[in-house]
Image (tube, rainbow, N blue to C red; front, top):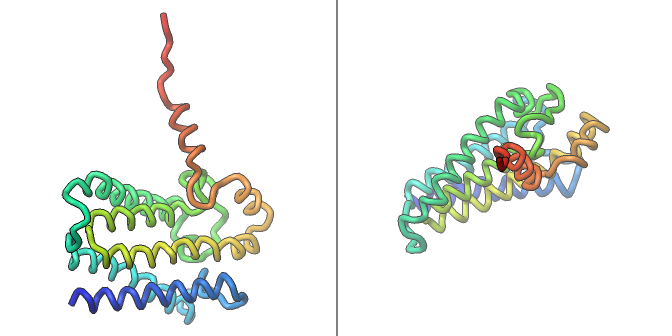
Length: 201
């Protein structure tokens, strides 16, 4: 059963990666961002994407702790990474808005989480998949997570030309100021500013 689920997840994820790669390298073909709900691109993309993600989690559950790589201490990094990834992904939906999340044109969002990343939901989802892979201690889960991470990376890349056409100069300026995945220097600077100052009497 585990191998069947894994094979189905691998097929879904690999097919999605190939379609995204073609979108990236051979326009005007475009599987993402999808033209409109109900289009063949939308049906195929969301079927493969959701199928790949769900089957990754199911494989993790079925193949849990099957590989003698890590002991219980794996939960020390794995659990926080998984929870942080999930939390930021959910927050990103509210920050971006449902319309924009599903390829709408509800306005360019540059504040909140989008101040530190042009793709905070993708970045957080990648972090969550890393946490899942560590926690599951499963080579099959690592393989599927890697395939889905590839999908997130290519989704971020193929969106950029679409967003440049949609929003023009404001988006180009935003790209110049904000990291594609994570602005570590900006986050560290924010933390430093929020530290209480130490004053000597």
